[in-house]
Amino acid sequence: MRCVYCNSEKIVKNGKSNQGKQRYLCKECGRIFVENPERKHYPDNLKKTAIRLYTDGVPIAVISRSLEVPYETVRSWIRAAGEKAIKKNRRKEKSLSEQSI
Image (cartoon, rainbow, N blue to C red):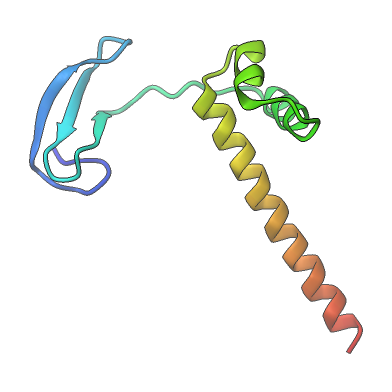
């Protein structure tokens, strides 16, 4: 088995996850991981609600508690939405600048 982050073979067992799966610690990069983690999938409307609440000024911690979604999950949705918006704006700016030439 190898570390899912750095591909090192220097790993040791490190307890069990909340789901009872074996947890591992990488001695190379220091990160903890679970082999074949079960990811929880959330509906798109829940993600959109979280992003809308954030753009309305609601703190991530409040969104997380209200929607019963882990803080880091909400944070990753917001970050991904921001990156998507930046890319979309760059494409629009490029298109507009090409039209004005």
